Length: 252
Image (tube, rainbow, N blue to C red; front, side, top):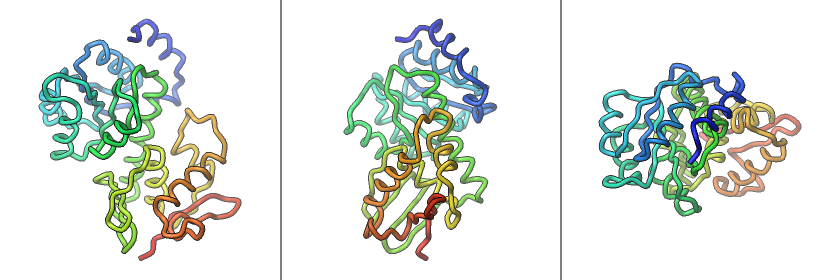
C-alpha cells in the first residue's frame, strides 16, 4: 500500500497541466479499503475535484443517487455486493463513466470489466499521475461529446457506435475495444468528417502522459481497422489523410 507521505511527494511533482479538467468535478470512489479511499481522495482533491466515499457497493449506490457524480471509481474485490455486481447495478440506472481500480489483473478481467460497462480499467498499486491522466482523458472525451451537440450514436448496415452505452457493434455483434482504442474511435467519431492531425490525436488520446510518436497513432488505427472495417486494407470509416492525420467518414 502506498503511503500518504509518498503520495504527497508525488503530487508535489505534478504540474498544473496535469490537473486540468478535474476542477469542480464530482467523483464517487467505492472501495472497502479506507487507505485506498484516502489515496484517491488526496489525488483528486489536490487536483481541484470533490470526492465522495463509499465502503461497500450498497453504500456506493446510495451515494450515486444522492450526489450524481461525474465519474465513479470502483473496486472489484469487496465483501457482500462485489464490484462486478455493483458495476452492473450502476449501469442499470446511470450512464455515469465507471473506472475500475483493482488488484485483479489479466486480460479476461479487463474484458469482463469493459463488457460490464466500465470505460477504463486500472490496476493497483496506482500512481497519482496515471490516475489523473486517465480521469482527464475520460472527462475530456465527455466534454467533447457535449461540445459537439451530444452526437453519441452512429448506425449503418455494418457498424454501430453508441457512446451513451459505451458499445460498438459490427454486424450487430459486440466488438471488444481496449480503453485506448475506444478513446481514439470516439474522438474521430464525434469529429466525423473533420481531419484530425497526428498531434491532435496524440494530445487527446494519450494526453500529457504521452512519451510516444506518431507511430502509435498508426498502430492503433490499424487495430481499429481490423476490428471495424469490412476490408481493413480499403477502409471506409477510418480514412487516412496522407501527411496530415485521420478522419471518420460516415457511410449514411
